[in-house]
Image (spheres, rainbow, N blue to C red):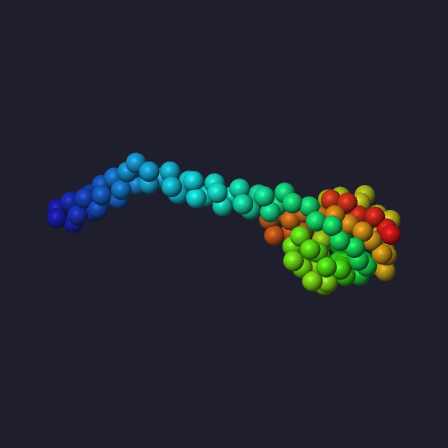
Length: 115
């Protein structure tokens, strides 16, 4: 019986603290703020140029120059084509200029053209 009362009392206490005014609102507000920050980063478009080093399916590996908007130095990175039509005429060794966005940790090509 004492165990039941303790469990019930603890559950009631937890339930009440979760329902206090402002408790849930602060958490939701913090989550919304952090999501909007991530979304802002995801919505940004960046431009670069470089040389295609590999193509596998819709993944394009590009040795690119500096990307100032992301403070990236020159490097080699993988980018995802939105569809195969974007890259059908491209081959390793091609010099390209491209635009990309960041979505969920992936870099998505929004435009890519041979130089």
